[in-house]
Image (cartoon, rainbow, N blue to C red):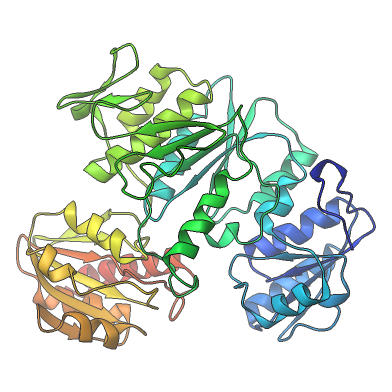
Length: 459
């Protein structure tokens, strides 16, 4: 076994390490461990052409593996590294816990091998937008930012790259999900950013308390020289850091933020100097203003000049799959919000619209409450549901709004184009995870955009 109680004394050279999950993060962790001299073995309970292709690539890298089962070799390891897609309730995890094999996540594992400053962003919604904003703000002449984590570029890969080509004045900007916090011991961001907390992933976590607990682990190792940036407008976050050792830095959509305040016309700093006029900000929406304030506060704490922060605010127009305008067809606007994987994110998307809207929901339900959507947003003209959760969605809302159930997303786009009228919006904001029909929300969003493009070709 590897003693992981003291981060500074951890040595994996020559040790046997098993990685669970042959996805992006698992593959990156295996390669990082191999680079550092460990004997790496990777395993996935599933089997597919994609997994077999990854196994072939890893074999060329000198890493052995298996697919379709977890063999006894897992439990014979000195350490197990878990990909975030594998729940802590899985049989292989329970067996390892019983046998005493130490278990860590990919984020934790990678963090052992770098002393670069980390700015880590978590929250139920807005993470991807905020990390992209912060990454741009931290990309300056004197600072190099690397964006990694839950966005699809594994932290372990970023750390491995820096082992071979280190860069001075680097900062890691990480998007962190609750899954990635399940197996952490020493993970220690210099700046943690908490955007909001609302029901999410309740299909994975036992209850809301457990979900919040996983989120709060992000700040658990921070000390007096570190910072916690948090949304004081969020009911759960407003006083949760009152006893924190790290400096707690609130942001708000009002005038009382610690670093930046907001009034009717501008964002201003501690000296009441204007950071930026609100009408100069490229990214629309009140929810995005909160994301801007979170990123700006973190960038300030990392030493970024206010002029550079404001320039990013003026030019940053958003990220793919998050309220992304696809095109207008015959007066109908199609918007790709595939990143909205919970009901609260759907509410945020709908709040940004005022036009009559056809809402496309569906995928694998994560424990969200769909019943309030039609009552809260009276501009919803119809809901079209697809995928595994469509019957559950139908039960929740069919009496409140026109409802259509279809098998897949392509059919949903086709039906929406037939029902939408001039001046309407068709919004893909699924409120569910994508894994019933897609590998990830990105593939779902690209499929939506292809289906919309096909509408033009068919005319």
